[in-house]
Image (cartoon, rainbow, N blue to C red; front, side):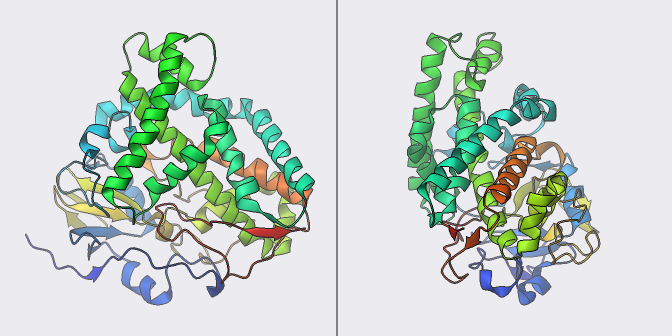
Length: 407
């Protein structure tokens, strides 16, 4: 059966921060993309289904007949794969389905359970305080991205994994290349291989002395690699995934959250004066900002009806979680930011079996970081105009390159 392509799905245009709220689309684009499941043309020229309503997004993401495997025929790629991508998928469980996905994910589930994240909250708090001490000592003005938003989650994930933070320039620069939609495939491959080689060197050192440290890599070596449950190449891929996801998303969320909250000092003051409200504020920030602007891609492995439209086996679908989080059927005044909203239905971390495994850690980092920042610097303000801020429009994960502030 041939479906009519109803509209084009471009790589998202630059975000206009001066346009008012952080709308994922302008009104013309909203009319084109928001609504029933529809057929679109991807930037690669392939066709796919576009899913934007909250109920449809949840239905698709929890359905077992939709695959996350990039190499499955019909998968809706937004950019060409690097030449060796087929052989570089080991350990990347977010791109696996079924038993293989479950096998690898279960090895990490306990590490990121809420009760275990609570145990490391003192570490997060100390890291936040030390970073803010450095910010205060240097004095204003400052770039909040390079001095706080990026170092904090990088230090935390380095501590958990056992990766030297002294190497942060190396892995941060290559992580950003991997998330840039305009980087040529060969350059992507080079950046990915550089990170794999780096992590393999760290892991090889632990293989020789697995009992010297108690970080996550060492525990996985002792408990999974040694008994033969996990291959070394799989561990490298798993570490690569955690390293990138563990700092890029949270760093961008911190920067954008501060920009948003300081535009309305009363909202920023909520974090300082009502710390018990911080968890709800974080949920609303996650809903409102929805920094994965390109959405989540899947391919159907059997015929499935989503939102009244039949998606056939082998057809791709792109799920726009940023629009699902602005669905007026679920959220009152969805384009308004309300620090007292109960936004627990937001899908910023995805939904179903592939939802982000590190979300308890991300929530804790955001909550602790933003409360501490509001208490330490209650008069914090952004010194750049919206037009002067440099945004990461080409990245899979939207964010700011810098955020000039004073206090």
